[in-house]
Image 1 (cartoon, rainbow, N blue to C red):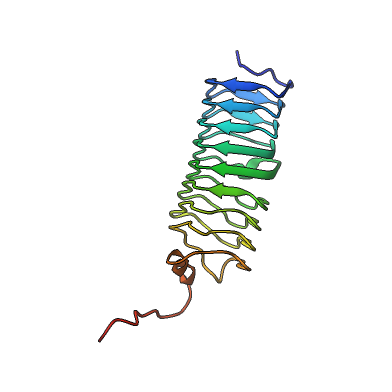
Image 2: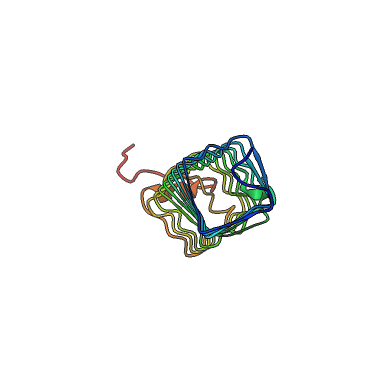
Length: 199
């Protein structure tokens, strides 16, 4: 017995301390709902819609969002480990604040103006992702993959541990901060020397 009935619509509701793991939820619409301290790990939300929703301190690890729609939704201090976001039908204006996005896949998604700030995004995949005007400040991108990623006007100030090859991604008016920006030289056929080094 699940907390949500398939095909139902829930509007302006508060859900707190729900534990719903390894369940299958189908064709449910959530509008202006808030989820607090919920555990939805390994649950499948198939063909569901989340519109203007907020998730706070939730465990959504290995969540399956196959063919779902996520619009104007915010995640704060959530565990979102191993989610394949590329399986959604559409994402519009999504925000992640102080979340764990490790091992997530955002391949080929349009994340224009997305917010990924103060997060851990270890080994996440952003290949062929559109991050135009995205706010990626103060996020740890250890071993994350950026290939043919559009980073036009994206903000990476304060972000660290990223490896973004300048010759494999679109960098136009992208904001970075030193010393982390030295990583942009990765993959270029150049030689760097310390000017203070004496032979």
